[in-house]
Image 1 (tube, rainbow, N blue to C red):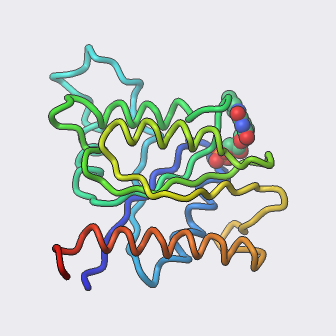
Image 2 (tube, rainbow, N blue to C red):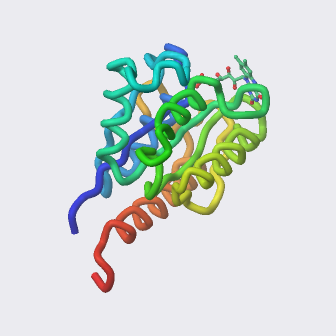
Length: 187
Ligand SMILES: Cc1cc2nc3c(=O)[nH]c(=O)nc-3n(C[C@H](O)[C@H](O)[C@H](O)COP(=O)(O)O)c2cc1C
């Protein structure tokens, strides 16, 4: 079976992002089944409809990268009980013009981490709704990861068995979904 490539989108522009750290650990966990590429969003300007027609080059880079992928892993913080502006901004750029949206038909999984006990659950629910609206097939299930105590080290290694196996199962489910949706019918 052809290995599929998944784009990682981290909903944070923070240098020491704990979500980027979690994303690295998730990619490592699933590296036996999937290939990963990082899709940068922190360099995108604020969406402005006035820029349509002469889109900044960096936006073209972003939409080409996402456009070339079939599957995406979103790992996002929660900002004021929703999706951080940097992530919503990237989603908005990718969604226009509507007939060229880069999101439609993609397969995605969502997770995220925060110090709080609900581990970005509300942001993830908002993100699920937004992506669903844009025609993304979002994997079912939930992965709300608290960062207290820290689940992963700076090199992307899980620090306890329980969260390692929970995340491993989540990533296995995602790998199976991505492979199934990429296979021709009956394969
Ligand atoms: C503007 C702002 C709003 C925040 N709102 C929430 C929130 O609603 N829920 C939450 O769990 N953490 C919230 N936090 C704390 C973040 O979870 C924390 O900053 C976390 O480190 C962000 O993830 P990152 O390191 O990947 O950027 C907020 C932080 C900021 C800066």
